[in-house]
Length: 254
Image (cartoon, rainbow, N blue to C red; front, side, top):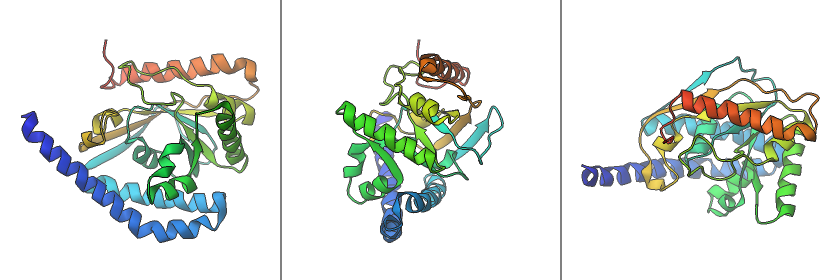
């Protein structure tokens, strides 16, 4: 059966890639135009372009997305959004999850090297090069600058794909440092089906089906200092871990 399904999956992935590239080519002139309006106005415009891209892409590839709120979510507030990182499909899911509020994703600098897409990516994201402490510190300063301009940020605190088959990998400090230093509350997000839709093992693992995001309770940071960062990081980790187990995330194994 697997031998029969695998060619179908390749064809499906190529079809999804064709849809993605076609949309990218259609909007690329708008991306170039937006680049002349700076990182803030131009980036906010690209948020809308990416929301539209996700709204077109998901139905065309037979993927249904749903957001679940375990607590009320205020779209008028700024947040440091943190999410579990386990799939190449995380970016499209982010675009279906965080709506009606502008944000910037902290993403890998290497993605900016992809032809055409890389140009759009550099305009719409804050990139991080983890090759040196200086480059990582520069990304933190950029994230703080974005927040100071009234825009939320989206960060994967695990840094890289979780390949452990545990709910989460250990968290880096960056998201929590930014939250404390800017006094911006943290909003944890869970991407429950990202691994099933496209695993970290191959981009040709893409499959149709459901996509669920869960908004957990806001974690306030008002009055916290850097001495509180380890406890804050552990609190958010525990919240996300417990809820990934509660929802029976498919990659978790004994």
